[in-house]
Image (cartoon, rainbow, N blue to C red; front, top):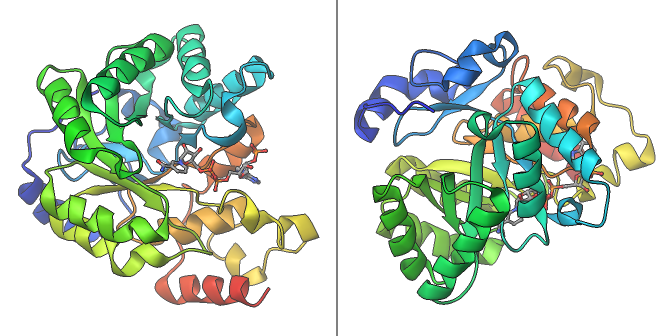
Length: 317
Ligand SMILES: NC(=O)c1ccc[n+]([C@@H]2O[C@H](COP(=O)([O-])OP(=O)(O)OC[C@H]3O[C@@H](n4cnc5c(N)ncnc54)[C@H](OP(=O)(O)O)[C@@H]3O)[C@@H](O)[C@H]2O)c1
C-alpha cells in the first residue's frame, strides 16, 4: 500500500473542506493502488488517514461477536471477507481476544490470496509489555503475517507499555499505523487524554444512533490533533435493528432521498454523515450484510438537518 509524503499539517490544509464534506473518492491523494484499480471501489466514499493522506474505503468489517467461532462454518466467514474485497472494501478489524477470529481471518486471507488487498487492523490486549509482545507473536502466527496496517492498544489497557512496542514495530516496518481503542462512554476522557498525550494515527471508539457521547469530546480532540477515527459498534451490537427491521418498520420516505433502502444503510449513513469519521467497522458473518454495509458508501450523505431528523426518528420509537 502506498504511503504519502505529505505532513499531517500539509494534508489537513489541503484536504480540509472536501474531506469534511465526505465527497472524496479515490483520488491522487495517496489512495491504495488496489483500490484505484477497481472501478467499483472508485465509486465508493473514501476518507483520509490524516497522518499520511492515504485514502481508505470508509466502511470495513469487524470480527467480534460470532465471527471467531472456529467450530462454526468457516466458509461462511470466508464468504463475508470475500464479499468485502469484491465490493471494494479493504479494512478488517480483529483482535487476539475475539475467540479464534484472527485464525479465521488469517486462513481466509491466505486462501483468498488477499493479504495485500487488506487494510488489516488488530490489537494488543493484555497487561504487561512482554506479555503484549508474546500476544502479538501469536497474532502474527494466527493472521499469517508479520505486518499490520494498524496495530492498536485495546481498551486503553497498559497503553504506554504497548505503545512502546507498537512504535518499535513501526520503526522496524512491521506496523504502518498506531492506534488506541475503547468502546465505553466512561472511557471517552481516557481516550481524549491519550490523543493529547501520544503521537498516534488512529483512535477507535463507539458511535451510533444510541450512543453519541464522543461528539463533544473525542471527535473534537481527534480533529485538532489530526487523528483518524475508526468507529466500532455502529449498530449498538445489533440492538438498533430490534425496533426497526425487527418490527418490519418501513424506511421513511425522506431517508430514501439520500439513498437509504435498508436499516443497515440508515444507521451507517448517519455515522458517515459526521465529517470527522474515517472508517466504520460493522461486525457481521454474512456476505449479504457486508454488501449492504459497503452499499452505504454510495450516493450522497445526509445533511446535518437530515441527521438530526434521524436522531429524532430513532428517539421516538
Ligand atoms: N474496544 C474495541 O476495540 C472494540 C469494542 C467493540 C467492537 N469492536 C470492533 O467493532 C466491530 C463492530 O462492533 P460489533 O460487531 O460488536 O457490533 P455492531 O457492528 O454494532 O453489530 C453487529 C451486529 O449487527 C448485525 N449486522 C451487521 N450488518 C448488518 C446489516 N447490514 N443488517 C442487519 N444486521 C447487520 C450482525 O449480525 P450478522 O452477523 O448476523 O450479520 C451483528 O449481530 C467489532 O466486530 C470489532 O471488530 C472493537
